[in-house]
Structures are given as structure tokens and as C-alpha cells.
Length: 569
Image (cartoon, rainbow, N blue to C red):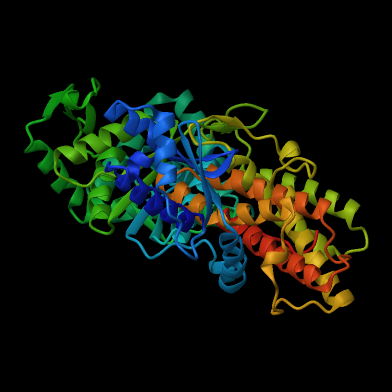
């Protein structure tokens, strides 16, 4: 709805500017939200500087030339110094309520757009996902959800390292140590991987065995490949379980080895050589990217002729470029250099570059994590802790509820708390995840938003019993005139623009902030305005419709964040 309001304001303002003798591009209108208006334009600043006029006087002249068409969402336009302020009219508010009631879960969805291939998580299959990995998963999954709601055709992929050095160590470890398959499969893999690294540190000569395994895989040795595949399959099976619990789903798991087997790795190395950028450095083949601003060269082939993760990643990106209009990668800050080199190399050979979302790391108060050293808290352990604490809170609040209800709500609240607390921080900022704070119902995190949704559901259930309310009832939106009612409607109307902005800037935290603000607007409305006990029957019906609309947009927001929306808590 807000996007339509902005479109109408754009049209009206451009026409008024034309009437006073100027032409302007849409981008030069410089719209922004303001505490004084629903939309404020800085166009007078831009035009005044260009045409050497007084911005305040120019803003007044433009406003005088404005004509608001019949049925417009714009109610009033005024000049405030050099700013041109737009206020939404009653038609905008009424139409928002109607749209939410009609479109329901489709409210806020954009028109169909291009195809996007998004890669995220892609953690090495050498153990379970830990807290350091799940920011990638949560950011990537939420981005995919936002992009889909914005109208994009999104395929999500996990790139499986099934042949690198770490996997060679895993395969070597599986042959050397007994796997405890009574444990979750990825944890069993981590156990032997940790033991193997202790052995390799104690006896460096074993590294030659790892190198030999890597050479055999690249040479296509069937038995070695089978051992690698078995180890990787066990780890990936466990990782998938963890992702599913986190409400993260990948459409496709793509293995590195397919690009070696297909000859794509060999082909891309030859294409890079043909650019004249490659040279030998201590026996390794490297790419010179100095003209792209990288002093460090990119190694694409070891001295023994084997390829690297990066080489195979280049082939993967060439393949991805043929599958979609846009490619998006979600990488941790430790990939900042390599992702830049990857993009530069692809550019140098004429292949479409990916858009890269770089995020800083998340840690626990306990400190940093390493699978190799066995110093990590697995995501599974974290989820167990959080859901156990959530169960205790639900038990305190709802002692009469069934054990099954408490378990379902605890899982929804616990996982929601993890997802929200991680996604609410802008990707470029590092964060420490404190699960006790994330679960605090009094703070404005996921439990607060979920509780707001549950409250709306509870109000509506009570209304069905006490006043025979029905969601299909005709209502008069013009009766909603209280400040808190108008604020809530305007906040709901913003949903499409929040989705649009999050999709354009690839920043999912924008939606997380909005969801919290929407819950706050709903709670403010309910705090100050009587709903079920409203004396006037028509006013009561309108307010209950507003509660229903808030429920719908809260549910849509939570769903797009990958967080469950409980009907009772």
C-alpha cells in the first residue's frame, strides 16, 4: 500500500514541478519518511541549488501548483520550510484495511520478477553446524523469504565441499577411527575429525597421506571417491536435520566434485590462462588481479596439479550464471578477500558476477568456536538449551495447558528467539547471541512479536464467543479515527515497502525491526482503545476487523522472518 502511496505522491509532485517550469527525475524527488508527514520530499533543495532559487519559496510555489486527483491516497500536501510534506488521506487508510482483509497471506507480495539463485550456509561437512554457522543460515533463509515475497523466483542452494582438504581429513579419520553411529551422524563425523587433527598435529608425516587422498580423488579413483562420498553424506544428513529444525530449507545441494567430473574446472582454468593473467609462483598457478585492486594473487592450482576450493567455486559460479538472472552469495567476513577475488576473476573472463552479502560473525558469551579443535557449541545443543528454557516459561504462564501444547509453543518460541535475535542485527555488525536475553518476553524480541500475534488471536476467539463476531462481517473503516488506530493502519500499510526495501538492499534486519514496531503499534492500540467492550456495535465490528488485520500482517511478517506465529501462548 505504501508503495502505491509513494507512486501517487511521485506523480502529483512531478506534475506540480512541471507546472512551475522545471523537469525532474523520480530519483531527484528524494522522498523520505518523517515524523511530521507520511512522506516528505527534498525536491525543492535539489531544484533550488540547480536553478539558484530560494528552496523555501520554491517549495511553497510547488505546493501551490499541486492538484490532488479524486480518489487519491494523498489527503493533504503542505510546505514546511524547504520540505514538501504529504499526508495520507482517509481513502488510503480504508483501502489498507480492505486490502489486508481480501489478500490475507498474500498481503505485501510484489509482482512477479526475475529469477534469483541464492547460496547460503555451505558449511564444510566435517561436523555439525555451530552457532558461528547459523547466522549465515538465518540471514540467507530470511533473504530468500523476503525476495520471494517481493515477487522474485528464488532457488536456494547449498554448495557441498565434498573433496577439499578438510574432507580428505574426514575420510582419513573414518578409516582410522570407529564412527559412533548411535550419535547424530554429523556429530559422529566431528568426533573422528577432531581425533584426526590431534593425530596430524602429533605426527606431521600423516599429512602426506591426506595429500595422496586428494590427488586420488582428482584422478577419479573410484574407491577413494566412495569413501569421501560416504563421509560427506553422513555429515550432510545431520546438517539437514539441524537446518530443518531452524526452519531453513534448501532447494538443492550442489557438490563441488560435479564440476571436476564434468571438466568445468579444467575449462575454466584454461579460460583464465587465456587472459594472460596467470603465472607460476612456487610451483602453483596464480591469477594476477592487481588492476582490480588486489595485491594478493589468487591460487587456482597447487604445485601438484590439484585444484582448490576456489577453482571449483569459479566453475560453480559459471554454472550458476547460466541458471538465473541474478546470483546472490551469503558469506562470512572471512570470505571478504576471496569473494572479491572470485568476482574479479569472473569479470575478467566475462562471466556474470554474484552479488555478495558479507556478514560479521556471531558468537556466544563463551567465546569463539572451531570445529577442528573441538571448541564449539553445536546449533543442536543451543536449540535444546533455548527450547528447554522456553518450555519452563510456557509452563509458568500456562500451567493448565497440555504437555504437547507446551512443547510445540516452546519449540516455536525458542527457535523464533534464535532466528530473530540473530537477524535483527544488520549483517555488517558483529553480535554476541545471549539466549537468555533473546527469550525475555518483556523485551521486544521474537517472543514479544509472537505474543502480540497470539493476543490478537485470543481477542478474536473471545469476540466469536461473546459478541458473535465473524471475519466476513461488513464494516465501516471510517469509524476508525483514534490516533492509535490510524497509527496501526499506517504501520500495516508500510509492509510492502519494507519487503521492497529489504529485497533491494539485501538487508533482512529491516523486516525484523518493522515486525517489532508493528507489534508495538498493535499493543498501543489495544492498550488505549476498547475493542470487545466498545459500546457502539459498528465501532466494535470495525475495531475487531482491525485486530484481525493486525493478526494477518503480524503472521505475514513472522512467516517472512521464518518464525512461527502461535495462536496461543
